[in-house]
Length: 318
Image (cartoon, one colour):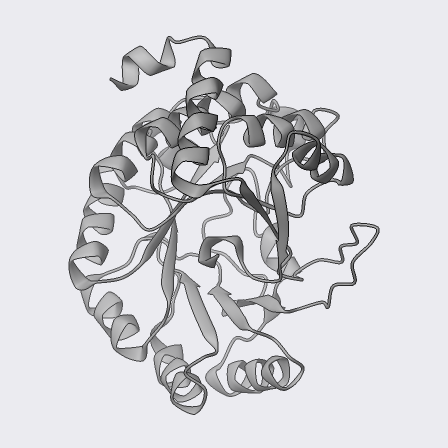
């Protein structure tokens, strides 16, 4: 079925994807504004850090992935030890934050080193169970996954890579595609709510492992699917920008294969001349949510009859 869908014209895919979104989710389209960056839609005030991202490794990452080299971590709040982590979260909580994304740089096994932060997470959840904590884990071992489950986190985010060359050449990891599928199955068996991410254009801007990643995620069955678009932060001349047609086709096929699963366009996408077209293409391809939309995207959604709603929350939790 996937091969057949890939060969189907985009317009036909979008017609079916829009039908499925309306059938299962009605006319609502949400816009996610977690406050990790400054954002103004022109009419509504938003508070910074309603849902902040924290890096437990600061700006350090062992992998130095070709598209990032740790640059993305610089936009997160650093908390490299449990005491700092508790202070940062408490300040955010008292200032009205709804929750945090816990992330960080990965080690040479592709894992974010979370071990020493588990007691802090348990302490925070014990004090305020309504405070949301989601964790971007990278590849993760079963013992750590079970500890996170016991700590009471709401969700695990994980990038799913569907091409062995991308794993090796972009992530500099000695891992296989199968490792990502096995990790998803393990997390699901433990009972975690999953929000896997597919990075469109991961292999230096080429579309390579995205279809395999989508196939894996569909087979496992998850709570939500997050699609982000490659935004090279380093070595930009090595990367091409995926086209709106490519991003729209992956989005539409994701919706058709997962008709009742919420699909989100996440925070990351390039500040490119085609950004507006990418966002409109995502709407036409059946997404439920777009994070940090352009003003023109908001207007387009209203023009075609969608009921728009802003949420100050990480898109994966909506």
